[in-house]
Image 1 (cartoon, helix red, strand yellow):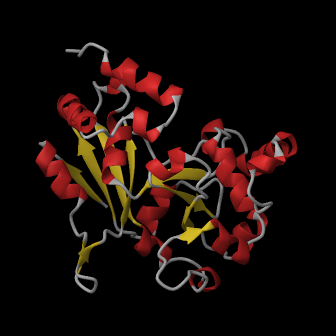
Image 2: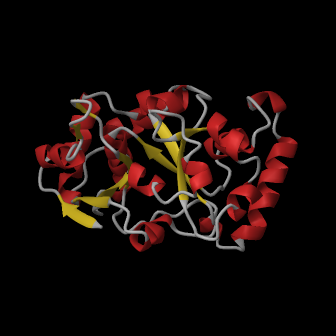
Amino acid sequence: MTEIHINSWNELQDTLYADSWNSTLQRHRSQFVFRGLSNKNHRLETTLIRLRGNVVKLEPHLLRNFRKYAHRDNVERRSIWHWLAVAKHHGLPTRLLDWTYSPFVAIHFATADIGAFDYDGVIWAVNYLNAHSHLPNALRSGLDVGAHAFDVEMLSNLLDSLEALDTISPNDFTIFFEPPSIDDRIVNQFSLFSIMSNPAAMLDDWLVERQVAFRKIIIPAKLKWEIRDKLDQANITERVLFPGLDGLSAWLKRHYSPKGK
């Protein structure tokens, strides 16, 4: 792990785009995905783990009841991967974690909560290709040619249940996959999810144990207002990332809030 403390807007950009040059393609194509959090002390903890119960027993009950009561036309297929994506999208506690390919979207989530501007923020940057090198062979070989992350169709062809995911290997691993484009929110946020094969496992612990390349980019509290204002001018706001009246209201509330000390 590398922990980087940035001191300016320009240094943040340089750090986020470091190592993005692909000499084979002669293009800038980063191997990292990003997750922004308002407090540097927050871990890579899923909403399922935050329930603090026996997550192995809780998870199937949550999903079973969600599928039972949800309108069937909200789900493209009966695949567990579609159900998980829809459930996460609508706030059900799951073992999924939100990530983005966009460094700027990650910066937004690290600086969106002005109530946390007294705390240093963090952007987690994980080399997802490196993470996928630890997949079981049966899954790694299931990635389509040219693809580095899975989509729900690929996963549906490989694993038909969470039980199959949990038992395919004795070793914990993580999968990064792109959700179906349920609405503009997923598209605009350039979203993907990670999922651990063990619902009780913490991704940050696994990254360290497996020596996967990742960085923690620390945004000091004193820089948050400047970064937030520059993001707003670049139109990286709730109005864009959460299309609709809820996102518009959230943007206006934050935009017109007075600056703290």
